[in-house]
Length: 619
Image 1 (cartoon, rainbow, N blue to C red):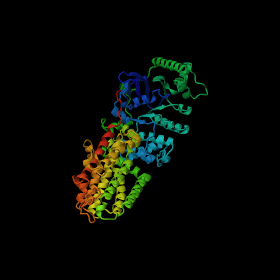
Image 2 (cartoon, helix red, strand yellow; image 1 turned 60 degrees about the horizontal axis):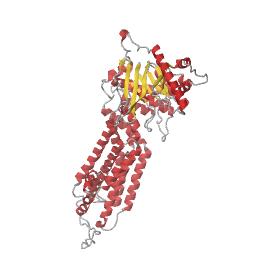
Image 3 (cartoon, helix red, strand yellow; image 1 turned 90 degrees about the vertical axis):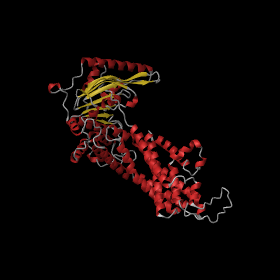
Image 4 (cartoon, one colour; image 1 turned 90 degrees about the horizontal axis):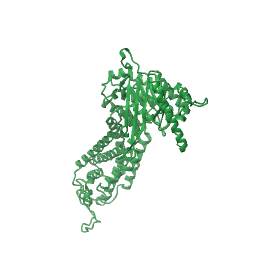
């Protein structure tokens, strides 16, 4: 695939929004990259490397509010974004993965999501094997990707795995943002060697590189040198030294050419004199290259008989064969959901420390609650307040456990979600509901451990209906709390924000839950909040399970003493009246919890969907 870009400009508004000033970022950049070649875009920090790469790849964020102009041609024609996405791949600078998956599993999942649905299992497996072999990942294919906590593959292997997840679609055009960033010299050279191999296989590879070592510089076919949004040089990398030598800036024999070029085009801001001199040099080099461009215009795109654009490659033909050009995803929503559900289940099963901590927490708090309220003596009337306290604490304990097992999910996975959605791997709904479903068994088991221990140790009503009703309410209360956590997690950019916001919702639900203050005592202008409190419905449901249609042993109570401190209700209905619980029956409380569990999840889904990547497709 031949990619040609002409007079590409990008500018943003800065300063006062009412009277903004225009700041140009890219200033009329042009170039052409042929198949089987590796182009490196080099320049100092802030030169515009990544901005240009994102524009060429169709990955420039629309949120920046900038303006793009120019022309980008693919095989001599204006690019169609739907087709272009299928024929190109973008490798991010940061290698974001699920640490609990192996290299092969990571690449396999990408293949299942992004390869055509009508491709046979054998073809898909062969593609995966080829990618692993091509990138030299065979020896580590069954090793966890890992992270700072989980031991896994090396930095270079992780980078090649990053490239591999994109190569499974067999793209003809590959964009890489700083592929050597954070790697030592050995691993950096291995990664660039892999990119060169991809180019020699017929692909067009474009990569931004900050400052490559001399061995890496020698691998490059083409070089584009940027400074302050200007082109300092574009052409064969091997000719760059001679070009600058003719301008009077010859590279010393002992210098790495890339180091020398960056010294030439970097702005020195240590003092005014240095800044003025380097600005003057940059301006001079930019003018000289404009003169060079006029004398040596880019060659036209290669053509075949009749002047038609370069023929489609095998990958182009494959995309045309298997998918409607207007189709956004390679596989159906149901297929996406099933693949992501399997991935989520695998990851959850390998989070052994997290799972064990959750279950041990449920065990300890269940025992602690049971020991505190262990078969409390005295007649039943004296146990009403302590029983209500036990039920309320039980709800809050499970709520906080559920909330803080969920609250950091989306902020921690934000980079992965953004990467996979940008590559059109899946619809956000498939990801979201797979995460919801896979967490339910873990939540249910934790609830069972806690509820069974505390129920029998405290000595609640010993009949099957009350017991299973108790389990149902505790589970639904936890699900409602987790739904709020999902919602907060979906709107939070960072884990810190999510951790700060979540307690506001949980504590508010707790305050209006019906235990600390009666409904009648809530200020009128705040009373509506009680109907948004899942704790209110859960507490009411548990109290109804315990006291509905039940006579209490009020012997020993002196009903002639009507002081407030004397509380001797003769029936369970009186207890429910005391806590303002009789106004809503058990079924309505359960329904309210179900609606809150579903409603807040739907809200979270909407928030997550609305925060998806949006790109500028002006050119």
